[in-house]
Structure formats: C-alpha cells, structure tokens
Image (cartoon, rainbow, N blue to C red; front, top):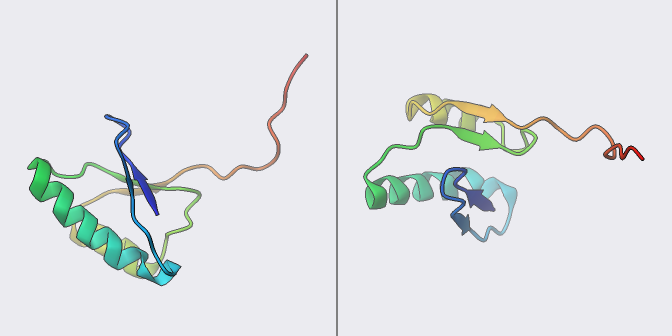
Length: 81
C-alpha cells in the first residue's frame, strides 16, 4: 500500500500480504504519523474507493477523519490533435 502526502509529496510504502490487512496497517501508520509530526491528519482520500468498507468508514468517523475517493477512470484519455 502506498500512502502519499499531497502537501509534501512524501510517500510511505507499506507492504501487505493481503487486502484484509489494510485497516490495521492504516491504524498503525496513522498513530505513528500523528505522534511523529504532532499534527492531525486532515483528510483521507482513497484511490477509486477501493478501500471503502464499513469498518474503514466507522474508523474514519471515530478518528474524526473525512474520507473521500478519487473519481474512477472511465476510459482512455482523449488526445486531441
């Protein structure tokens, strides 16, 4: 799983064995980052909503963290000549 800070462009790569480890890895990452930088996370954006689940949504609500998704790619990009 790759996590990218839009403000600083800093990236974290977190190896996962399977997708069911995402929520736990995100919990740990969230705690480490907020303790390290002493600044709360402002928003969480997932790619095309792939990480959305009831447990992810409830965790974000508990952490007072707005959760949003990117717009899925509908088709190939149009190149005008």
